[in-house]
Length: 456
Ligand code: 5GP
Ligand code: SF4
Ligand code: MG
Image (cartoon, rainbow, N blue to C red):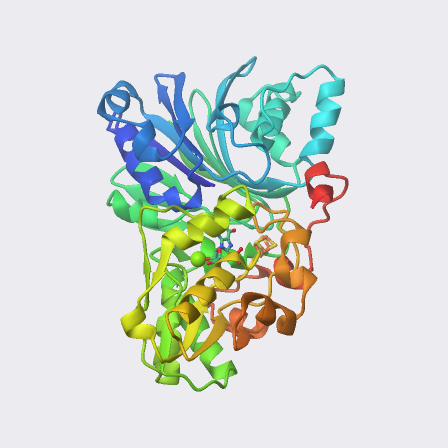
């Protein structure tokens, strides 16, 4: 998911339009639903729906969403089904006043908290982790809403980067491990919060800094305040954000994402020893690393596979049949480039193996002489419990087969993965620590009794 928030200190500016643009820049983080909640003189209103940002909002709707503070969300479901009741931001009316919340990540103790709250009479409307947080705030014994939010954040466990809005304040918070990105920016006197810095660029805002793990920022009439609501844990930033999820034009921890991916490609070339005529990316996610691979190896880069831009992300489709069909619709290899050539195809990751298997079959069918597959990350062998839909364990091909077995399954002449050290060496952040659990199974936060986690 992607989150966004604005606090306009100079009274009403076009906050809904700016939020719309910000969410548009974060669309890659979720395409299922989107929403904007505005605060107009303490009165909160939300507009949300299923689908893409451009389909949900139009000029009339945005003109109607007047206010000084907003939060926005784009959703990609990892927990909770893809339904309108699960669209965010969530807006609740509690004894502490109106409160709106939007969240990126996944809590590992939400089932437990939900169970406790339900046994005390709470009624849930959605299956969202976000609603668990809202209930905790509403039921907190702290009267002050900021204190109640702080108190709630201390009870939840897992990955979260969230934005919240009360009748007076815009709030942003990151879990103590810092799994998901969250940054603070400014446009004149207006403060902006966004999952990724690419959202600042689109609205002409300047980046101030990343919000720290375990930090909560409160922006209201009194200005901007930073609180550390809990003890900081070892930094565990999701390395998959750098591999695949974040937009290449974003910067995280001072590292540009595109440049990190290009470096992963260079490192992969150093770790491999294959002779080939061409390096070809599986678009779009394989492009930066294929560029780096070509630079380092001296093997020419060619855009030998065309991507149909009008097919969305294939990965999220519900059945294998539809995923296969969509990959076919989405990726088309160019015979005139590939025929009779020894090619290295580069992609960022293999999860179920759908993309690699399909594309290798097609590249062979148009006459490639040899097809070598090179992946700019290690094998994904463990599921993610922290907000990325890297699938269930039984669907992960690297949990079922060794590299030789995967190579056979996808039909490549050879298969190469970037080493974990090589991956981490490619990313130049200032003292960040990383979560690498989907590669090595080293989970920083125990999943406990979470039902969703156990199903994986
Ligand atoms: P596979 O086809 O092997 O199941 O998945 C690998 C492909 O899906 C790669 O091209 C990669 O770019 C993309 N991918 C990897 N992880 C994710 C994810 O969490 N979500 C989405 N939408 N795509 C992913
Ligand atoms: Fe990211 Fe993988 Fe860790 Fe999930 S398990 S947070 S995808 S690195
Ligand atoms: Mg891809």
